[in-house]
Length: 251
Ligand SMILES: NC(=O)c1ccc[n+]([C@@H]2O[C@H](COP(=O)([O-])OP(=O)(O)OC[C@H]3O[C@@H](n4cnc5c(N)ncnc54)[C@H](OP(=O)(O)O)[C@@H]3O)[C@@H](O)[C@H]2O)c1
Image 1 (cartoon, helix red, strand yellow):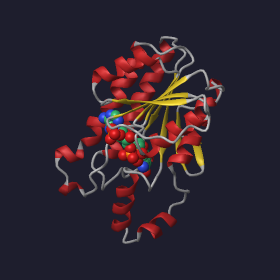
Image 2 (cartoon, rainbow, N blue to C red):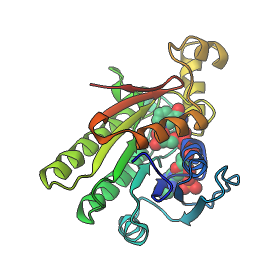
Image 3 (cartoon, helix red, strand yellow):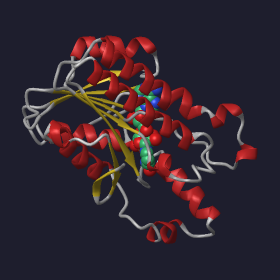
């Protein structure tokens, strides 16, 4: 996987935030990138002139979209980043609809896409990364973000099931989960940081200073995912926490 220039990378959820940083990093490294999101994305010209980013406007939670885009592009690197913005409020102020929003988007997207990866199947040697969240590892979940932590934990479980099925069928496809910690400049991270800072009685700045890890940005996420895509298959671990200091093996 070290040379990305002849390979297609598909980033699902790339119009902004971490996915935008990841798509940009892969294009800069010379990969052909397909950027999937419901709204059109604007990208800077890739540092590597041979590379290009093609935007596909589609709803990734639609069961037919995964099949048709995987069929059309046959990516060798697939990164599922897409996720809903959380409704930040305590349990009693959630409705079932706000509480379950990440089950209807993040979990649904992971289910449809990993199922298609196995059915298609992607080519041997392909690599699939699912972006979950560090919240999935919290003992007390995500008390101000509804069903977020549980949904993100389920994404990690589904990824493990898919890796197991890929091994059983000898597909040669490697599937891993990445669990980011706070990225306070993006649309999922920003409201979360504001709500948890307010609950702790701290300003956002003091709350962020108190975190025991450096903050993630779209750019550092791009660098880390590039590193993961270029790692030897033998060295791949099933799950990694990701923060501003890079990737850290979990479990
Ligand atoms: N930011 C953090 O602190 C943090 C921490 C841990 C985990 N994460 C996870 O990292 C991922 C990205 O977070 P972010 O903060 O970068 O989010 P973001 O800025 O809101 O970006 C989300 C991206 O996903 C796309 N998307 C959402 N639903 C989609 C759908 N149904 N079909 C296609 N594209 C869809 C959005 O584009 P459109 O709206 O145009 O479709 C957008 O490009 C999420 O899964 C999130 O849970 C984030």
